[in-house]
Length: 489
Image (cartoon, rainbow, N blue to C red; front, side):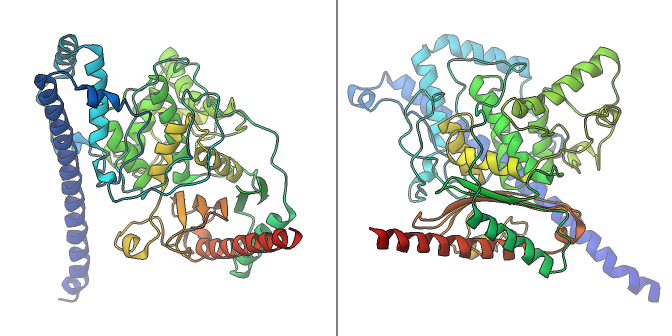
């Protein structure tokens, strides 16, 4: 009897875990089916318009939209069809044949309108959602249209809208490189450095070792920077997915990747939910590789070259020493708890680490370039900011069991702060890089905090404490500057 009583709670826990897993799978299936239903409805609506005849003069007078923001509709987690047992009714060859036949029946203008209609269908949730405006963009040479404003920020429960590929394909998979070249180093600020030093002292006051800590703080209003061990390469955990997102958007922009519903869902799952299975599929697509058994000869050399190409994408733009060529684990769909097979072969490449390595400066730089609309293009940056934006209203994020707010930089901030971030957490690290702007726009900055030690992972108070201290001092600094400016005037 004592043995039965001892084992019974564990049995209940196992049953509870199994039920939660089944419920999660069911939710993913429902999300996938709803997404496909919405897509089919949009296609039916377009065909009805096509059968009804060409658009009227009034309809044509509105023109075509230049870009699409990310709509605030329901989140659609990614679904692995191998898990759910869902199968498509036709083979890929049959679907391609059907698509080619449909293309021959429709003129190019209608084909383009079809793509626009499909994208517009995802925009229906924008009404009433509102936009968060940020400071105006400086015009970028690589953007064909002149941006009228900086990327719109919206809660990241939005469904991603993937733009069609650029009409002018300038780069290939082999030559593609990040478009933002390094500028002159940002001026260092003694005032910012004092804020960073205070954050380091705060960590030490909580009996945390500061050796595993890195901090980067960028004042977007003054274009100044400060940091602590900000050039030290560290394992980024899921912060690396921010870099994979930028690569994916660049390949979509150049037509190297083609947009589809699965890619759309995986981008949401990877960035919003930090899902490793979705990230694995995205990673496979942007590197043109797959996980699997060990390889040999030229097959392995080609695989390794493609894997390492993702590092060169950023290194060519001044991200020196960055390494993002390893997946994050566990990957449940592949039944992998860690590197295996060909991934373990990379251990033999002594110049390549088995784990990704990123500095807090590099994470902060990429976030600032996305915010400024420089990353890939203004429209692509806008999409990325939409996926990264988080709702800081406690009534919203506290309802989410696995949210990216509790225990991180957004937790202590006012609910009306504009906030976009990517967190990374394992049993050994707690990281985050975030864009933070006050409601009135007087304060805007990038804050990256990396804590690479189990003591940081286990401490859910340190990042909120650092964030609160930094925000308070940045607001006070801005208010003091305004008073001084008014006095001088």
